[in-house]
Length: 135
Image (cartoon, rainbow, N blue to C red):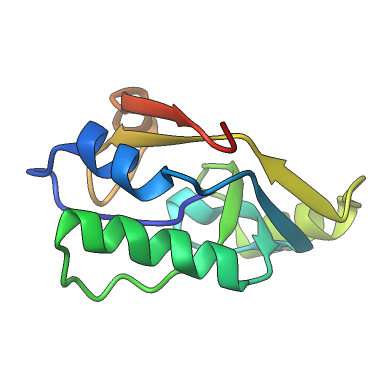
């Protein structure tokens, strides 16, 4: 789930470590499967925006000393693909979520091309750091 998008020049490991200290597991309420024309949100699960996610986003922003205008919109991308709107809608409508809530146990910082426009961009993504939550 994307909870923050920041600049490339920050020290991700230090920032994530500061932000998640004492955070605990993150539980998110799944709302529905959605679709869009945006490559990285072709098909996705939309999550409810709750206080804990907002606080985690703010802690990361504070640790990164970030003043960008990124707006938290918690979602989990299921598919990155260029598709017709009809195909996207049919696919989104055909999926019934087998869960109403998801528990996230870790957080990862990913270095990626922005904007991500194609498969090659996605394949170039690299995990910079991973931190456990709730420990």
